[in-house]
Image (cartoon, rainbow, N blue to C red):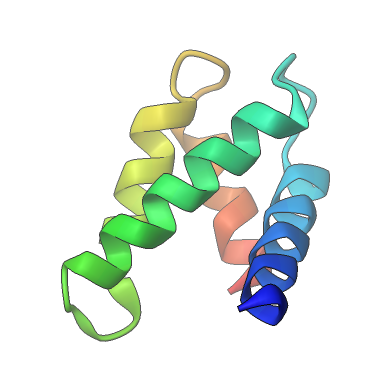
Length: 77
């Protein structure tokens, strides 16, 4: 379980580093990342394809345009 927590935190940190400057703190990105991951798993769609991306776009929309979040996600996929 500890390994999973570390892996998700590291994946969120990579996502945070790849985001363009938007004035959002790491804790905000981590929260959005975890919510999106959990929704992707709960959807039972293989790989959570589309669910993760859509959730991240919706959750990060107040901080940046939708294209910036989508480009950051495609950089780590």
